[in-house]
Image 1 (tube, rainbow, N blue to C red):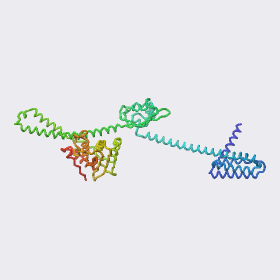
Image 2 (cartoon, one colour; image 1 turned 30 degrees about the vertical axis):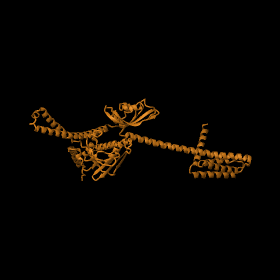
Image 3 (spheres, one colour; image 1 turned 180 degrees about the horizontal axis):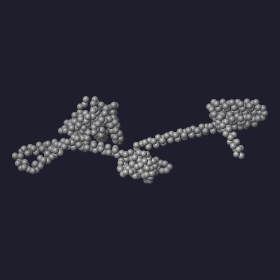
Image 4 (tube, rainbow, N blue to C red; image 1 turned 30 degrees about the horizontal axis):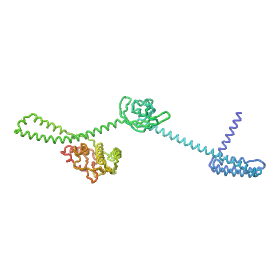
Length: 513
């Protein structure tokens, strides 16, 4: 029994090998084989005498035809084979018996070809799908490998957690950030290091809700050190429950730099403000001292006044107050350096554009290509630009047309930045740049400090009259030799604090050749 089954299987294998051999090759080769087989069967059927039906042999060429032709071509070939089979058949043909027989023969031939056509088509579709699956699998594998390399080589800490905040995967940077041995972070709770992040996937969160956002919070390393963490995270769902993927960087340095810059701005502004107040105090002390001296000269008219201890104490107070007002406040931290103005204006636009858009103010910035480096304190210059923008916002409040135009052009050894707005304009230009004005909304120190900042690094701030709106011009020096620029900036700073009236220093610095 086993031998018979093996013999049957061997016969099927031989038939399969023979059939696959006949189906190999191009479409033309298969059709040529089919035509030769049809011709050979027809000749053999024509030459053999007797009632031996050989029409069933046309099933083999139909098998070949079905693998390369379409349906209507298969049907036409089946008609040809049916005609040949009926023509060389020794049986008599009659209408009652011939038509059913021909229909049966045609159906057999056509169904054989159609069956092979569908089998081949299904096989081609399956092969195509298999190739697509293999190609997608290779692409997915390559993407996973690239993503793995990207995550592992990233300087930022990257990790994923489950709904309970337990870390599932983490890269090497995450271990360095939290100061723990490599490979020990998975399985630990992120609550130990970033407590605020646990609330994102809390049980009270809305089911199915996804978050893709950023946050800043305090983190704690394994050694107890606290740091400022900048976190970008997203949540997603899996069959095992919600997951969270996060990328964390240490923002402590940025925080320190930001606070140091803010302190520098505060100290610089305070020194300028105290210098202005000291100037006014010196004037008052000078007047009081002169009156005291005059009274002392006339002691003969008022002998009791000269002998009065209170009068003597008043003189001592005047001297002490004068000494306090004469304290040298000109020593400012010199932070000026070469600044890329185009880059600074791009940063400025990023800061102010959202706020201006909320107030329906159209901002247009036109920067001349190829502007040179300028000499300035980057943060002080940025503060001046922000002060001018806030002044323009207030001036355009209630106006129908709200437009702020900023242009930056080079003029020989200077670079001019013009701020033009369509606001209400300046009613009293002669009162600009003076502190403690009665008509000012606050103290009137914005423009005064802005001009002082500009002159501290050999720049200037001035107003240009306009028929509509107002224009302020920020003048900057082109950066040259650093030592020369620092000496010129120190001379300009001394001139600012040594003048008797802020307006007397309204002289535009001359270009340096």
